[in-house]
Length: 266
Length: 302
Ligand SMILES: Nc1ncnc2c1ncn2[C@@H]1O[C@H](COP(=O)(O)OP(=O)(O)OP(=O)(O)O)[C@@H](O)[C@H]1O
Ligand SMILES: [Mg+2]
Image 1: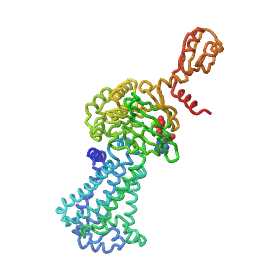
Image 2 (image 1 turned 30 degrees about the horizontal axis):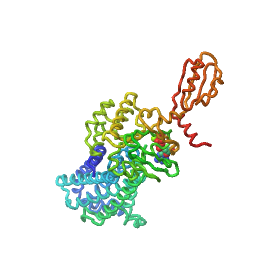
Image 3 (image 1 turned 90 degrees about the vertical axis):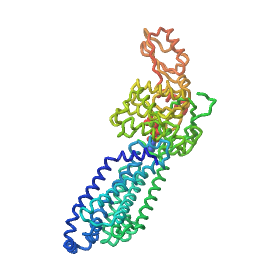
């Protein structure tokens, strides 16, 4: 890892990072502040939800909605937080090589006396840390507020859910690294990674309704991340392993291809 | 430059195809320690392609290249440590000030060279504290010049380095280049214009449509070059008076003006002109195009 380059990546992204982190904190705080009224309505809310069609309940994973884990799962951990981490990861991944090629700065970056592999791996390391940092920030925010709003959630379970979200972010950021390496275009890289994320998320959400999606489920990273319900059941190590393992494979492909390719210039 | 030493840079049949389209073909030349080597050719000739292949930024299709005894086509970090490279289009991280950028470069190269950065900046009249996105094109190019020279490289690839620099700064750039040369650096200097390199380079290569047309000393080339000379006489003259003058390849007379085309030495023509009472002599320095055309014609006789 090259410290100067690692720090540069943080510096280059600090504005967008600040806004994403701000969005995460704001969303967590708003949701947490709503929780007391949901919990108070307790049984009433549960019976209200009983009347929802099963399909809707499944899509939004509404079981035990008024409990701490159920509430956090529905409102934050089965969509918003994974998507924020994916957005950050894909943006950093798309900027890593594709933006440098597009802007023409790749000619000076890869003229430094540092191997291409080390440069790209350093950028990956920076991306992993930023995804983890924002994921942990959200979890800490919840821990900080939970006693104020009387939300009960098991600490290790919360971190298990955080780990799943971070790994999901990793998966799609490694895809943006790969797409950026293959295409050399930032827009294409960002579009492919986030587009795939949205489509796969949609498929995951509709799985309960559409039988034809069942065949995809075992390969859908959102299943690996969310189907194990880490907020209720703790760490889903198999799902996590699948996410991290495939991220590493995709990342290695990105590095391997980039190492051999012709770098484009302006 | 000494021919007894081994070449620093040596290209043998270096070839790069971009898919179907032509890049460069069978490019071969050598550059010696302490030599400034001009690399000339029109747009799209293959100058940038050659340099970027030597930098390992693009992968050669075939052929070989060695720099400082190392395989340039594998372009190891160890080799790049000793190369300075100024890209043809110098794009930088514009969210930095010039100084921040150059210090980042120093960290990436693992060298300490603040002194040299400030020295060059002062000589080139660059304000190091301005953001790069606020700099004019020429001032940005100065950042590029410092970027290429600041780690005292043994080999320099300068792809059209003076583009955008005003004449005063160009002169200072030439001094910086001469210092590097005096230190023993081997420098490849690409340009479209012969006049830009003729004061700096000993030898040049001319490349056209991806192929080397000639590698030669500048002085030799100029002797061979075709020049246009206009002679203004007191009164109308006759073209026949110049028949048989050595070096004269063409003459067009219009009243008291004669437009002559000369290859090699102008001496015989000038002597004849003086004998016929010439008043004014107007010499058109051979442009790259003219030298280039002659060479292309002579290298591909129909
Ligand atoms: N990335 C690329 N893909 C396909 N063809 C390319 C690519 N880069 C350059 N070429 C082609 O290779 C040839 C040589 O281009 P190159 O940029 O090396 O010329 P040059 O001598 O540097 O020209 P200029 O003086 O305009 O900078 C041109 O025909 C160009 O169209
Ligand atoms: Mg060029």
